[in-house]
Length: 302
Ligand code: ATP
Image (cartoon, rainbow, N blue to C red; front, side, top):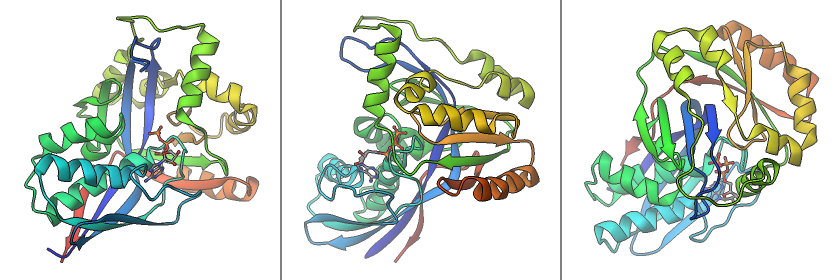
């Protein structure tokens, strides 16, 4: 194999419940992920030993060493399977950087499936999921896709079988939000310090509504505990959210923000809303997205 192309989807959290930080500093999560059809593309070209990366379409500069999640993913896969070959990774980004849609995790997931094929590692899906869990909380979901319930740091996943078709309009921001900064602000607002065995609010009502195909109930149970801290750090986001209230069936901050996700009743309603918002909010990016969609996959190998 000389060159492998792969893609992986971005995500929105239909619900994101956050508990107090554990003694290791991580926050226990209870979340419902949905993969949306905003895709990162990766091509992995065989190289004798080095792992290098180039990036196109990023909304801000990204690291090109092992700080880049795609490079890290290739390094961890190679170490695990004991190979010596390298790869040049070319990332084509469509997901805004630091936007709360897990673009870096999608790059890592696409890289894992691409390099698995390029280097003929023959890693199984469960091997890849395990490696993904070491790379970051959102990487396993970018591999899995669809709709899933996530607990732990979000890496322990159970797929949700639901006949859901969601039409989204994403309002992106020119400036990203740092996920660790939003969690730190969450602790500050809640008055939390590190405590062992902490409880996390659950997402059971939303899971039941999704399983029953009751979209009105599902929308009423959409909740994101990171909204308050994200709005505290970026009051402009609260204003933006207020300005679009009532324009769609539901709305939620995506992950740790700053992307705001509007859920519409139909494809037509989502298309019209996206067009209207493009005219009204020229300073923001507007992305039309549909979900749920499948996770990372190889699209071509030559
Ligand atoms: P999440 O929703 O998982 O918290 P996010 O969508 O808010 O993530 P990302 O774009 O995935 O944010 O990652 C943002 C940070 O990760 C930036 O500081 C960036 O420098 C770093 N990073 C490393 N590799 C990548 C990559 N391939 N793409 C984007 N960001 C990357």
